[in-house]
Every structure is written in structure tokens, then in C-alpha cells.
Length: 471
Image (cartoon, rainbow, N blue to C red; front, side, top):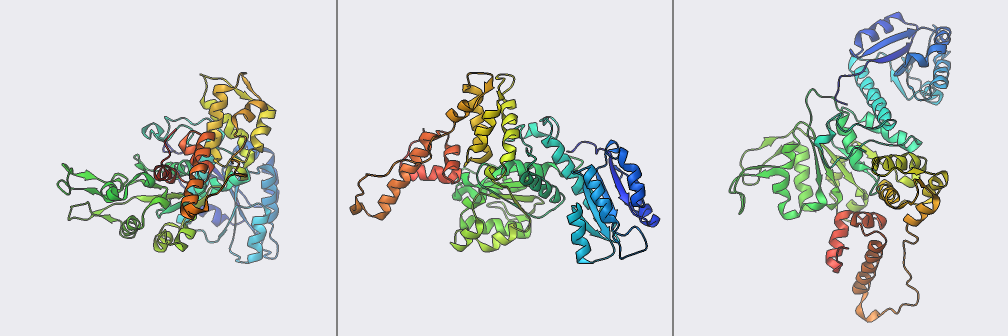
């Protein structure tokens, strides 16, 4: 997304020549404008509308001097019928609520009040362009050499949002709306729903002349004792073993984005230190005296309800308010099953040319019937297994069923319960049994954690506490 901007075309329907002229002057250099002043003119253009490949349309609600008639509604409906995916912006100097709602119901994606400022127009077009690019990425193979993905080894070449379901369209729209937003962004969703991919897309859609750093931090993997040193850096001699100055993760993200994954795993003491950085934008290396100004946007991800954690005293309420001004919720795969086929075909394509496997129709139906408690990550692992183990080039329903777990539980009936050992020990044994069964079904620790709905860091901690060896 950092390449030279493509030429975009804007279709404007307005009877005021002065408005048309002002929009032409205010348009960014990579946009051109085609104008019409009435429904009749729109109808003349419609036969070749799709050929002109418009990126967006702006429609005035009142195309005559009669303010009692909103002719623009008919124009919006006509354009929407021709191009269901075009971004249409309704505009008017009339602040009537009913008119605004009618514009949205007719097919407009947003409503702007006249007069439209230059900055407002530029920001709106930037967000529309971001949405177009996200949609284009979802429909074509993503080239890892374009946009700097090769410099991020933890981001695979499938780092794009795949799917055209209503839920997926909602996600890409919000990502595009967050373009240019400087404040913290909170990404919420179950494990495996694609939070790291969403964070990368938020980062990659920002236009800059030079590359911006993208620093990913798994907070669940940083011990509390070294958090401050890792996060803010340290100076030589600050503690035993500090034999040289070291910049922290925040400094490394200066001028770019700092992605904090598994924020729910951050201890309360460390939460206070993070909050101070978010409020001041300044850090001080461990052992240092000088404060350093850091300009980095913070993107936070969690698979737990932070509000519930606040209620139980596990998360600071002031930190939650600080990071939740801009939110992005990623739906679980079971709520966007229309995307399963596209996702599965994409993951199978990643295995080519070593293994050339395709999906039969009954295999697609078998995949769609599964609950996918591990979400997209679980689907990816299943597709990898199918590519490896399916005996035919055509993957069938029986191949899918062989890869899916037959049961996510285990029998407990008939077992004697020794109440004398106490509730704490009983719960620990039961928890250990659940973890062992999850690991039996899915030896991959990440996938086992997703299956029982806990984070990767929590899974490792529980295994250590309960004496469960890694398979």
C-alpha cells in the first residue's frame, strides 16, 4: 500500500456548479471528477457506468430548488443497483434527521453535511481508498514483496483479510475508517480470529514516504521482572548484565506502530507503566535520567473481556478507557461461515506447488458444519493436515471428518470423587484432565489453548503449575 497512488475516479451528482468547481479544486491529485446535475444525466451515464470504474460517488439530496423533494434518493438507488459495492456518500445542507436516515436506507454508506471542508473531503477519500485496497487484497493473491512484508518474518504472506461475508465487510470497513487515526486502537476477538492480521493491515494502510516500523510484542511472553527493561530499554550499568545501552520496544516503534498482543496477560504493576507512557508519550530507560519522546501509535489486542477483568480487579479501568477510544471487533469464524470456503482454498493454495489439493463440494459442506472453536487458525491447521494426509488430489468430506476432532470432551460418569482432598485439589485435577485431553486432541499447544478458550500464555502457565509436560 505504500506504492505510488493509483488514479481514482469520483462521480458527483449536484446541480450547483460552484459546488462541483470547489470539489474539483479540493480533490487530492490522484483523484479525478465526473459530474452530473440531474437524474436524467445520471440515466444517460448509466449504460457505461461500470466501464468508467468509479471509486466513489457523492450525491446531493436536492437536485432542484424544491427543498421538499429529495431527488438524490432516486439517484442513490439507481447507482446502488448498478454497482452494489460502490461507496456512495449522500450530502446536503439540510440537517433533517429523516432525510439523513433515508439516504442511508437508499444505499449511501455515509452522510456529509454541506459545506464540505477540504480536510474533511481528503480524509473521507483516504478512508474510501483504504477500503478499496483492502477489498482488492481480499480478491487477489497477495505479493509479499509488495509493501515490505518480507521485512516482517512473523507476518506470513496470507496477511490479508479474506472473505466477503457481511461480517467480513464490516471488519474491512472499520479498518479503513481507522486509517489516519493517531490514537490507540483496541482489537478484540477470540483466539485465532486474525488480530495480528488486522493489526498489520491497520499499519500497512498508512501512507508515508519512508517505511514505518511495525513492532509486535507478545505481552504474555514477557516476564514482569524484565518488562520495564524490554519495553523502555536500559542504560549501561543499570543492573547486573546490562553491559551496554539498549533501546526498548517503544523506541524501536518510533514513527510507526507498536502492536501489543495479549494485553490481558499484563500484570497490574506493568499496566500502570504502560498507562504512563500512553498519557505522556515519554519514556525513561531503566537507570537513565533523561526522558525520551516517542511518537508511536499503539495497537492493542485481547481475547478476553477487559470490562469483566476490570470488574474482577485484574485490569485497570483507567487503562481500559485510554486504549478503547477506537475499537475493532473481529467476529468468530462460526459467525462468518460464508468465508470458510475462500479461507480454506487460500490455505490450500499456500501448500502449492509441493501439494496440489482442491476441495470437493461435500468437503466444503463438511467444513461449514464444524464449530471452529479455534477460529481461522484452527481452519488453517486443518487445511495443512488435509493437504498432507488426503490420499487423493480432490479432498472429500470423509477426509475432512478424519481431520476434525470427534469429541472435545471426555467421560466423567462413574468416576469416584474423593471429597477428602478438598475443592482446590479437585479443581486442579479436573483442570489438568481438561488440558491433557485438549493436548491429546490437538498436540499443538497454541491450537489446544484455542480449543478450550484460553490464551497461549495462560496455557503454558497452567501446564507448568499442574506439572503437564509438553507433548
